Image (cartoon, rainbow, N blue to C red; front, top):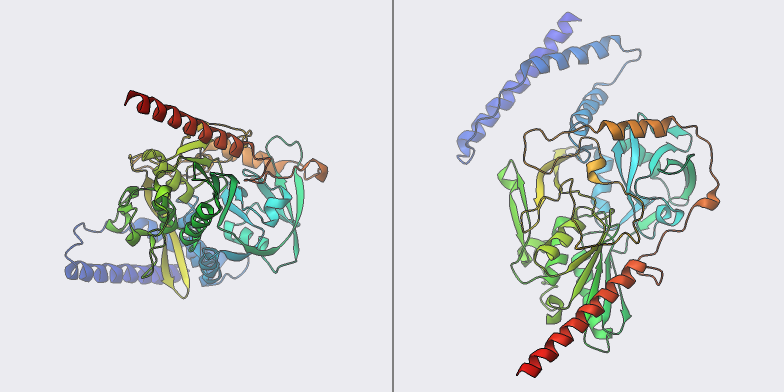
Length: 476
């Protein structure tokens, strides 16, 4: 056993030395690399080899080397923050498919919170949304398998499967005395990224459900269609970002650029590396993926000036917060609703080879006026909790969430949330009648009270503008 550990230590030391040599050669070749790399933590690496060796020799069952190393990588990343993760070949492929707008599953955005799966947001028009799954729900069982002890990726794999197969989710929900059971039928999730309609003559409604590869182009097409359908000049526009969990950064830039002047600053990022420091403008080079026609260039000129209200809630995260923040800072749109989720960190996908990758948090997002989105979110100009009466899960509720300020210590454990999660998991797994599950609100429908208030606000703005115009004409 001693010889095994000694050999393993020598191997790791050799690997470390090899890495240092290769990096030193890179430093010589690349003069831009100014700072010296920090020394390797020899004592900690020695402890790692000892644990590795002890597991190999003493664990109750033989364990494959690849499994141990993979789990060690998982542990390193999961311990950083809720959004960093290791992606095996299957997960890496699913991530790429998901950004294209079609994938298999239930239709929920989830994160891991103290050993349980927590719902960030159900995706509109999916099995989870139609069944009444809500933001903040704790998934404690998948069929007969307890979630406690699983990794997030393991839980996601169980939730995904062949279309038309069923799975039962047992959920602990705040305010409910007993866990709820939902039996869902898996389906191919085809997300309609942009929805649009005329609410009434002169007042348009645009909804972005998720930011995917074609979202910017789809939005441009929807805007053109709205302006053509309107029998009268467009007087007001509502952009709905409620329960939009985010997606691709360049699509957020494209959506913002559709409403802002050319070259307006939309968002900037700050991180430790030069690649993590970006300033993204309302310019085609920041939203077009490769060569192609600028789909924003041909939009009606009025799209830059028509009065706007942007709707947000606790399920609005990441890319949707970037758009809301940019429109708010440039005073292009009134933001209405409730405080957003607060997902203001940048995850970079770093391929490792063998079709695997790591998703690593590399920077924080800031609005044009320098406000950090991380763990804070966007505060609406008009607070209205019509559709958000219960407190929703937010980034600041997650264990190990990245803080909003630029301090060295960026990891934090929220003991209160940990205790709540554990208490929920310990509750008796009794069933609750499905008759108490409410049908979720359909955003943009006639029952959407917040949309009604937004249209009323736009009409008030139009009336004010007419009064001011009349007063100016009389003075002349």
